[in-house]
Image 1 (cartoon, rainbow over the protein chains, first blue to last red):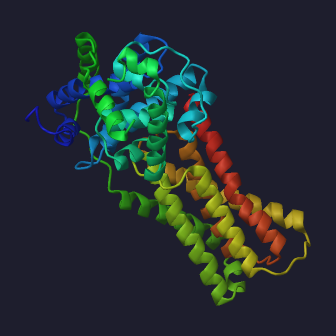
Image 2 (image 1 turned 30 degrees about the vertical axis):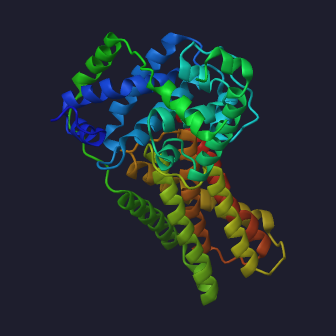
Amino acid sequence: MDMDGNLEALMAAYQAGDFAAARSLINRLSPQLHRFLDAQSSNPADADDLLQEAWLRIHRARHTYRPEKPVLPWIYAIARRVRIDHYRRQGRTTRHEQSWEQLDDKMSASPEAPRGEELEALLAPLSESQREVLEMLKVAGMSLEEVARATSCSVGSVKQKVHRAYEKLRQTMSLPELTRSGSVQ
Amino acid sequence: MRDTEIDEALAKAARVPREVPAELLTRIADTIEPAMQPVRVLPSTWVLIGGLVLISGAVALLGAARAGFQGVEALAIPARVLIFGTLALLTCVAAAQLVSEWIPGSPRRLTPAALLALVSLTLLGVFTLLFHDYRTEHFLTTGLACFSTGLLHAAPAALLGWWWLRRGWAMDTVSAGLTAGVLAGLAGMTVLELNCTDSQAPHVLVWHTLVVPASAAVGAVAGRLLRSL
């Protein structure tokens, strides 16, 4: 098995019981999943636990992946559910589910300070739903259709979230103090 | 600021690598390794949908065979075509929706609530079009009998559907339960349309249609209980 192969081939090998393929997938996808799971987490150790939980769920549900289909929407759908369940367990169900399941642009920006990493700092003013859509599009490199599958919503809804996210980013990034501090450039 | 500038800023920020501790990656791999074995991939989506439609149809026909087909015999041909054609179509839509709920990353065209609204409103529309006897004789007694018959037949349809999709992976058990409830409710309602001879509009509009939302509510509660386990 070529461990530099595409994700779909690796996933098919993983389904066939190839541990090297599974390890290769874990190594390749964990950084972006870790970043995705870390968003708005109040405790940095949470992301490590969530990543482990996500891979366990991926392992248990690996038979539901359909060979030849894109892997990322399938994996992100599971990771997203892990994140939602985590928030629910933390007793923040209502606020976060509303922001994820519905299009809610009126939701206030995250009260938590970004951790100083540039992407997190850039996305900090966005709502959960806008942030997760941009992360999938810009970090994971997924298409609109794939993001729609991963987030269980329509392509139109994804486009609308992106549009609103860009509007908000445009406002934020145009602020003179932000521009001066170099967080945009 | 232009969109391309935002794109560039995002692309630049995304290029900053995220470090994941090597020991964490090793721990994840080590956790998975003992359970590594080949798995059988799920059948195609169409097989899963077809199975659910067949289960719903079989439950409805068996239920009506036990209770009698007086209801369909009392209907005129155009009414039969409209009612059972609509039920068949809605069953296919609900089955497709349920399969989507059961497989991660599937395209979802409707939310469970939208599906419930679509099914309920369509059936109300069809019944309003076909039934024009607005008397309310024995409204409660015959109504409750029909309602309980519908729910009683929805239960085996839901259980068999659950069994059929048992190898899937429900992402959100509440949504999946609600959708399964809609599908099962349609099976229960089909039994009523095949069997019930009461053609009073209030009876059909209220008690027959109520089977679907009631079944959906039971499904959502069951999904919530499953989630809390």
